[in-house]
Image (cartoon, rainbow, N blue to C red; front, side, top):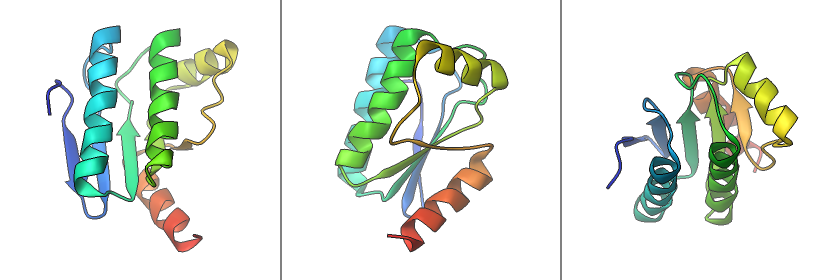
Length: 121
């Protein structure tokens, strides 16, 4: 993995916590790293924890949404967790509904959401 954001394999899923400011270049490397990790591990689920992000710009919002859609094309369900109210409001104002990406309040609920999605396949 080339970027500063670790991607961990937890059971059948990947878990990543974004703990740095997502500049455009870091966001692009993150997306590439996630897709490579999916390819390498065959993970059925992806949890992206954004709880430390205080704001999200248009480009980062698009990268997060696109990453979830790309993961879905690879057979991996995605759950975005830890979204702050301000970030949710910004995403809605920018028109990003995060289609194809599930959301949950925290990592535990995100993993539980992936398990319920797997059961309903």
